Length: 114
Length: 112
Image 1 (cartoon, chains in turn brown, purple):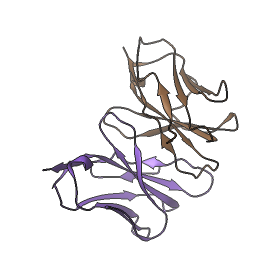
Image 2 (tube, rainbow over the protein chains, first blue to last red):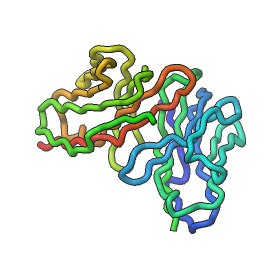
Image 3 (cartoon, helix red, strand yellow):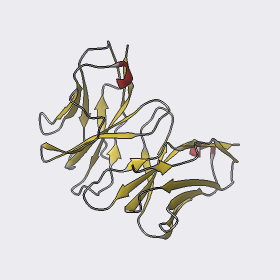
Image 4 (cartoon, each protein chain N blue to C red):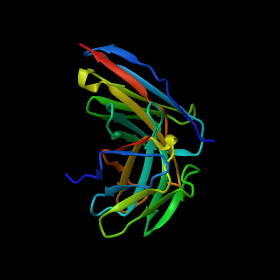
């Protein structure tokens, strides 16, 4: 069964450093998403991406965040200058040919900022 | 502000019992409702989606929706220890945004 994959599974970085989180969505999906979940808190939407551009973003997704689909398979989230409060699980999700289709989540990347 | 509220629990039930999980939401424009299961340290996994008032059954799971009262519930029959997880309610408005708003989840413990 096709699935969303994410790398790395765990990323440790120093405050102020740049990190890139990678995702490979399900191959025939067209809508891509990033969410984060701070330990013990709710899943929060960051950004959605369709047709090579951002379709929606939340207040959390400020100028330090960016997304890119550098090729036909990868979808990346870049955090330019990490802060302690960026420590969280970051989930990538994808959905099919319609934005209302079910979103399938990847296993997540645990980001730890020291 | 769209809010989705869940009792954080933990809800503890014996094996074989019915577990009842509840969720209320504030946005009357909500049209799509989802229940996800999340094991500790893992990603959310979709269990059920429901769009119309009433009950929807899938195996041991039944989702119930009451739009007038703005609540959605999940019943798990014949609960198993493997059902022990956090259950997330997610709500989505129709049209425009496809982004669901998640609740904080209810922790369920099924003890043998």
